Image (cartoon, rainbow, N blue to C red; front, side):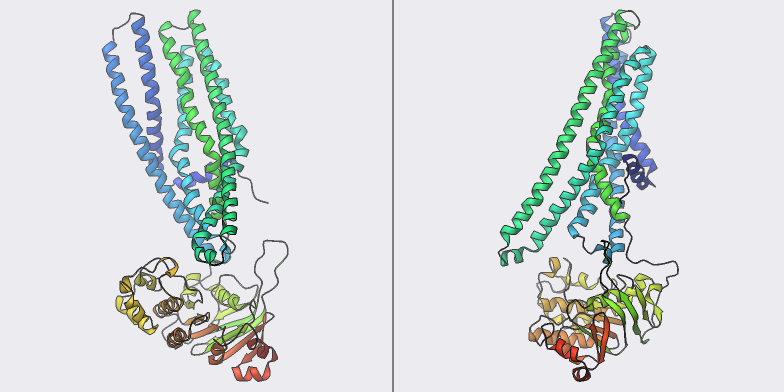
Amino acid sequence: MERTITRAGYVLRLCRYIKGMKIYLALSVLFNLLFKLTPIVIGLVTAYLINAAVLGDIRYLWQTFAVICALIVLSAIFAYLDVLVSHDMAYRILAQLRDTAYDKIDELAPAAMEGEHSAALTSIVLEDVEQLEWFYAHVIGQLIVAIVIPSAALLFLGYCSPVLPLALIPFIVLMVAVPVFFAKKANTQGVNVKECYAELNARIVDGVQGMKDIISFGWQDTFFARFEKALRAHQDAQMAYAVRSGEESRRFLLVMGLGSLCGELTAAILTVTGRLDAVWLIPVFQLCGAIFGPLQDALTMSTNYGLIFGAAKRLFHLLERKPAVQDTPDSREMHLKNEEPVTVAFENVGFAYPSESENACEPVLKNFSFSFSTGETVALVGASGSGKTTVSRLLQRFWDVDGGSIRINGTDIRNVKLDSLRDLITVVPQEVYLFHLSVTENLRLAKADASMEEIEEAAKAAQADAFIHRLPKGYDTLLGERGLRLSGGEKQRISIAQAFLKNAPVLVLDEASANLDSETERQVNLAVNRLKKGRATLVIAHRVSTIKSADRIIVLHDGIAEAEGTYAELMEQCAYFRRLVGGEDYGEA
């Protein structure tokens, strides 16, 4: 069951991120206080001046007028400083929160992110964090000011007459009670608005990224129906939030109007009965209205609390998630010397994917064992869904095994620091993701300090240098989102060039030449054969030609290594292998 957190709890948790900015916060509160206080003082002094003039006392007329002019100038200065300091602090904190959120996504990925839509995560990092600007730039200062100014005003009114605060306090309590009464509903609606926005954002991202397929399959009507459903849900959520917010605002105005009227009537009665000096009548009238101003600002802001705390809830839900794997205090670095032989061994590995339901998932691997070493290529063969990709993911420790162990040169990878482990492994995927960066910048993802000479050498080894030079700006050409400028084979060769630059001793190939034409396949295979030299290579095989070229073949069936050997040996000895390579999962290009 999800733990319920009150608004006070969210306030305390959000305040933790103000660490190191206490001076900013103090200045922000001070300037906000002075900004709100000066108009009240101006009103009081002006009212006193007018009242005194009406009663014939003009002794300090010009001096008081000069004070009012000075206060007007100060009010403008404080208004500027209030906005400058509070927003400077807020945006610094938002930048820190975005860094924290992205670091968390990096920690959780990729295992804990499966089933999450990238657009939903984007909306947390961008939109939800942006919503918290209201809290840091406005809420904290206004809450403090809403306590200080009314308290000071009540003390001043009490000095004039003890009856005046007693007439106003019930209405102040009523104003504070309004957002408390609506808090639960506002929080629920705020979360709903944020979740509907995330869903709408996800539909938009799907529509943009999948536009070609939508058009190709004539799926426009179905897609737009889903988009319209998400749009309508978001609209309805916003409307419900706005209606409730408007109801809160109306109640604020009603209570504030009645409170001001009650205070003014009390002041008039006190003046008529001689219990309040007439010179203070207009200033007291002014103060009876002004006392509710800071409260109104803070409480009107409370109409946004649902969105603010809805955003906070989604952000903290992300930040509190536990990664599927993490380093332990005993984890250590693992560095292999140049030319040091490497052996990767799966020893009786058992694994089932985590399930959110009560029913446990079926094991993908059961007592699965095999090994491969430097200088040899081992092909992993199995039907679709048999767990070939799972083997690759477990080797990179996206998840931890449920039973058995995976060892590199005898060391259990659970005892190796994650960054160190992943430095030892290069994966060339079947579906290559390239960023909207230049060719050079995409290649430097594999080695940040690579020289231009190293980059060109890696590209030549990957059979990529020639087509790169044909691009409009050569190595400086932007590849477009997801590398749209390039064909599938060109993307594969860029990925292989990245692998050359990384130069890791363990290589995992997810059939880099699958789904390519024969000429492109020939070029990719030339690059792959160069890449495999001197490395321990595991190939997730999809083609018979790849299977035949492997030094050894592991047949994965029902979660175990059913057979092992060369292509000829397995064709002779393993009936399941013969059925497998003759079926739909495997075939020549």
